[in-house]
Image 1 (cartoon, each protein chain N blue to C red):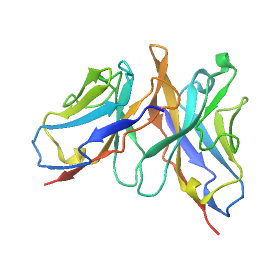
Image 2 (cartoon, rainbow over the protein chains, first blue to last red):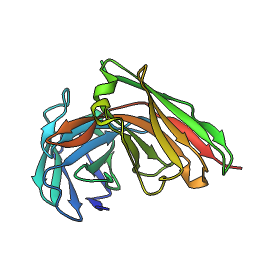
Image 3 (tube, each protein chain N blue to C red):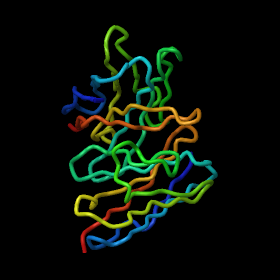
Length: 107
Length: 123
């Protein structure tokens, strides 16, 4: 199975900050990488697919980049509703696997 | 609007069985791959399995951790996905989500999620 490793595991930031979360795959996955957001007690929400394509309705302050094994999710200016846990997930092959999550907290 | 609603969760003893349902609306259910993903309490996300679409005969894939114990099926006359869970273990305790998958250059990613249903395996 392909292992997905995110860093950091947790992050404290303030409203208006720019934050970056990284995700590394244990082997090349081309651009078959998605980012998900999950708030406490809620279902995950899909943010980005194909490493850099925004899902419909996702604010443009979210962006993704990368290919192969190294990927990033950037939030350009944090808003109060962005404090959540973020997961990367590959869908290059079976089984699709997720990173362990990055918890983004208010500083 | 795409809606996915899971049901059927509850408390079951180790070794027991449970069937989860996922009702879809707002899209042509048979056109889409559908998946089950679970999340143990306080833990991350784990893919459970997939049902491909009707053109692909609703064929299935499973995670190694559930293969041989769990079965995914569909109601061909309606818009429902099922997860039959047998020989349940305490480590199967989780919130189970159904998710719709969308094709992106021959690979499928999750684009819509249900609200989840909690399965607790305990004596």
